[in-house]
Image (tube, rainbow, N blue to C red; front, side):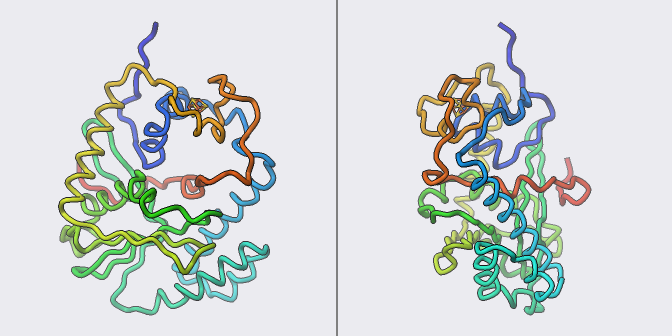
Length: 278
Ligand code: SF4
């Protein structure tokens, strides 16, 4: 049997780490075999796709707002019930985000760091920095159900984004490394704007998280097998069901409690990535 080999150098992201975590086979099919999406993830597909498009547009509206496009112009784009509600909630909480003179805002910003022979990249929705004082990572979520904080705390996104900001965010902070204690990660939910999830950070968490990132990258790099997940729950909403003989019918949209990959649908612009030297 041919040994499965991770291409090198490989660019890891929170999505690929999460995929490996949820199901090594899914990681293989998506990132090594590069199989396109052979099956719909949920049904009815129109509902899923509409939510994906709305989520994508919402992210762009926020990005444009932070870049300085007038609110009135952007409001005209909120042409569906969801978008209008999300946009109003965003305006209520963040309509003045640009007014603070001490805060530097980096919307849709990517950071990257080497890890062994590979590299690891994260694309942030927004990083807000008051140099020398604090750094807040904002992630805009259009979830239909508010996840528990305990669930979010263990997601690769939470671990990686905070650790990577310490590791590769120096140039955003007058060339002084951002200390973990200065960092806060905020998940803001467009459907639950009164209940953001906030995570403070610390040196101990940073050491733990980066060690975990190195461990999983090392494990994936040396893996020769990518087994199917024992738990069949992720299969219900997985595009690769037919490859694994784990059911033909997609999960119901009403039961879908996961995240639609809005962020990853933005192309990562490698020219723009702030990176520490190899
Ligand atoms: S269908 Fe299940 S086993 Fe197959 S890749 Fe998806 S999550 Fe893994």
